[in-house]
Image 1 (cartoon, rainbow, N blue to C red):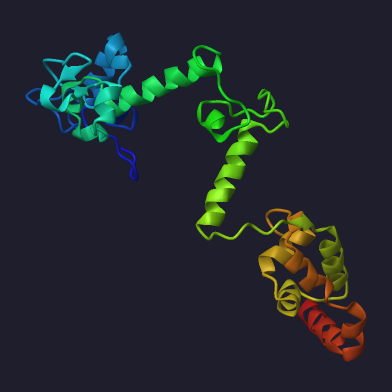
Image 2 (tube, rainbow, N blue to C red; image 1 turned 30 degrees about the vertical axis):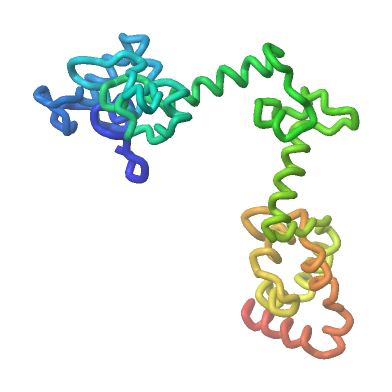
Length: 259
């Protein structure tokens, strides 16, 4: 079974995660639910069961119908999007979960999937392109989105909307990154003169990992940095280091280590 997100016993997903014998499964022949191996076999031969979530346990005997009406006083029908809308939103709490039927959250997911596909195909009310709502309805490829009159795609509209929400919540915008070639050149000059990555990191106030990535000495290569990082690196004057004697001391230490 998966250590972080184990599937429940009695489900096809439990079989996929390693529970493949009756001895391993918590559900035996006298159990209310099938063993994981039995559930996997039953699901392969039953179309209705194959449409249920793989992590849903399957009962051994009586299987419920896809929709099971509950108390009409609350006008709630389990196994339908209406049941989800009326508050049945926990998969395991839905009565159909233990009966092998369609749960309300699963019915809602499939309804939205079908609805989005219809809207994307132009069936029903057309999608209003160039809006955040258009993105939520399935228009998520900027290459195929016709956009609005100004050319704004649904993806861009969604991005702008999320940025507005973030600013309203007091979240500061991300700092734009810039090309790092000038910084990489300066660091290579310092490296050629004998300065270590740690020494350069101390002088510039920049992380040693960032310094290594800029010169190609790290596990990855960094091609963009923030303007603040660029200013810190370019502020190191090679001529000043040479005249101050700091560079000579670093070179002597490098030679001593090499010998």
